[in-house]
Length: 173
Image (tube, rainbow, N blue to C red; front, side):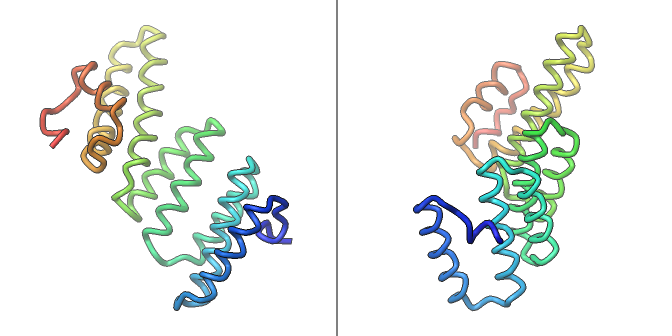
């Protein structure tokens, strides 16, 4: 039984019914509608912590979806799961694919930077200063792009960029 038909929560059921009605009324082709249903079921599974089911639904949605913006959103959600599971390189690769589909996703850039910054801290703790600087520079590079796409949206990142000396004056304009 599809996840959308087994939600026990009244609010989830209500949302699902409304979403189904909207999808049925939208003038889009059947394949796009089916892709949306898989995406929605993947999102529901992800929210419930059932990452394996979420990934299966997202894969099926990607197989059917042609819209690059929707594909980018699906890939971003998959990357979040990989990141949560500690599969950081796989998450980075998936974020890069998401940005290829839709370059205007500052949250992908923010999350990529989180991974690079973490790797920088780990290298720094191991006494590998050059390696740490390399990772911190990569974090700064993607975070600068994120801040440019979403000015004022990532104040913690802006502060890190300033505090680390990796800020460009033009980042904030």
